[in-house]
Image (tube, rainbow, N blue to C red):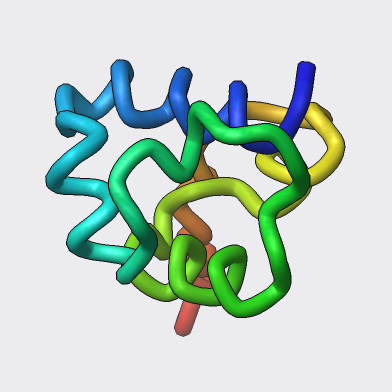
Length: 78
């Protein structure tokens, strides 16, 4: 699976249309359907606009699609 195909899967999961995505990350219409890799500027825009998107999943297909909430345990203050 490619980065572009994972982006498409993410868009489906959050119910966001491709045209809306293209506007948000400032790329041309059809960008996800064209041949070639995603450049670093576009990747940075994606991760900035969607901070809950798991970087490792997007790039490598590892882990879950969304970042897990990072809860800090409350220490016992007895």
